[in-house]
Image (cartoon, rainbow, N blue to C red; front, side, top):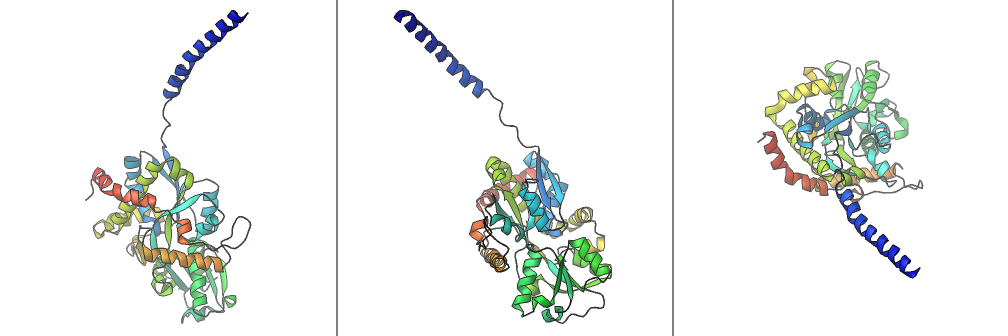
Length: 349
């Protein structure tokens, strides 16, 4: 019996010796992970997000990424972040403020680039007088929902100027709702981003009375937000996307491309040529999340949201974030190095 058992043992070891290399070969011969053919991105109907429109209209997404950007619009940041948290998209062009409440709870995402600074205005309905911040007391004003960049900036501005916020009736709505409310004189003022203030002026039912440079100069506005899993699992695509964001922002700012960019904005924002002529208005297209002045502005927003009790941890306790908690500039640094190569591929200077 001992010899038989030894023979069986040697046989099993021999078979195992043959199976291990075979298993290794099978493992090695598995096809590589298929690349993404679609990347879901969200945005808002504002020319703050012109870079995204340019990338798609120029076909740079498929040329450089080998994947199509599928873009979904949202009226403002808070509902956009609900969809982002639910995994409906991997990248969001969104105000810097809305992600803060999500990130304060530990959600796996980072701000990886700037999209713009400033770019919003207070519009008075026809016949409504404006004599500075105090004149908003006793009035109805509509802006984006609490947690949005517009609401955060507005509340800071009102408080900094000694306005009794309890005496201002603040309503929430998206750009179309604000425009319709101004038109119907259901509100006295609206505070919303470009190009809507110019639409109200050109169509004759509102007038701009104060803009970002007068309200909170150089304040951060929109950013590029990425899910952590997308950044980790598709690092090359994420980096190339940011390189395209940088290139498209430069392209949109170049006066030589204004007529082309105007046509893109007319298509994406459903505005007429008179409004498109106003581009970029008070919007400053920017991209670098390492800019010290921008980081200071982001810290100001973090503080404002803490004071408004918007940022809370997973247990519901108020938490004060800092720019270092929510920004990851490493991807941007990699993207900057790719820009010359990708420009050459696209035939750009």
